[in-house]
Image 1 (spheres, rainbow, N blue to C red):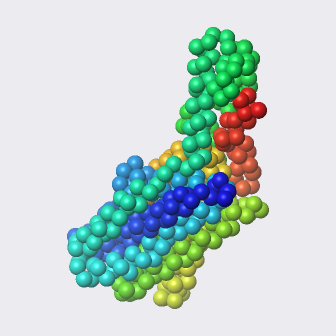
Image 2 (image 1 turned 90 degrees about the vertical axis):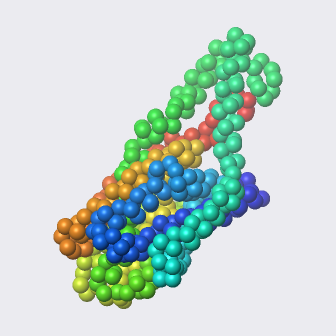
Image 3 (image 1 turned 180 degrees about the vertical axis):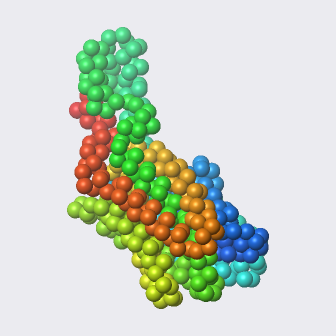
Length: 412
């Protein structure tokens, strides 16, 4: 069996899939609560949508709550299968879309049966299931190898200082270099792979900065659309059942989009960045289309839900694999943390801004124009990475296992 297909990796993948199903199933269904809370508290869309925005924002980037579940499970699912990262993360991410399929219809039923307050107890019971799921997560073999390599370099330096002029190889046990030879070799090694803080290494990566901007804006758009659409559907005359069904339909195609992007991104000739930018453009066009009166029918909303779901699923399925290309596998944990923090900020800010536009203008069209423009700009910002090939230069800056051991004398 290939090294990146160890049995426990499948356990981690299934656990990560279920964690995303449960956490995103709740978060992506909050739009139904927006309708109920507006009736209960007689408040505007801007204030009520902020509640769902905070929930989703904490999940992505605050460092507690759902974030402790989502970010580690999402990152580990890719690191366990480094040679098939696109496929593994695409399949695992489809769990979030599957949660979006199942939970809206379920929440609709339990709200009708127990009220929105009573439904919270049932959701709490679902959340408890994440405890055994999170207990199944383990470090990936590649992470343990990175730790061994870093410890080796640290131990070698300490040995040189201890013997004052001799460098004893920890694995062979014999003095193989004088201290000057070792220093010269170490200088050559450090010249190419400086031992720097993760933050400093990421701060010099222009492509990563562009990805941060793209992710922040896209998250603001996505959260706003998810939380505003249910209220919009009710406003144009749809009932609660049709609204829940449309939300589930959108996530059905988001589920398919995640799987498709996972398979497609594994193909070496596919430009993953171009595919992500394309998904941004499709999302923007679909958002603008909600303002066209000819499409403001149930069948029109079905079509928009299909294309909107596919585009968002493709984006989510590519999230981790493109991050790995941008920062390298070793920095994927730090990069994911910073990306999710920025995305959390966008998620918290997006829905209140969109809701405020609805409250101020009395129309949803302004919110759709605003969010559609935002996601188009997100694609434009990241497009230079495709045109200029920055991601290929980014690959040369990866800090992988081989990059630590290739120059090391003991591995020769």
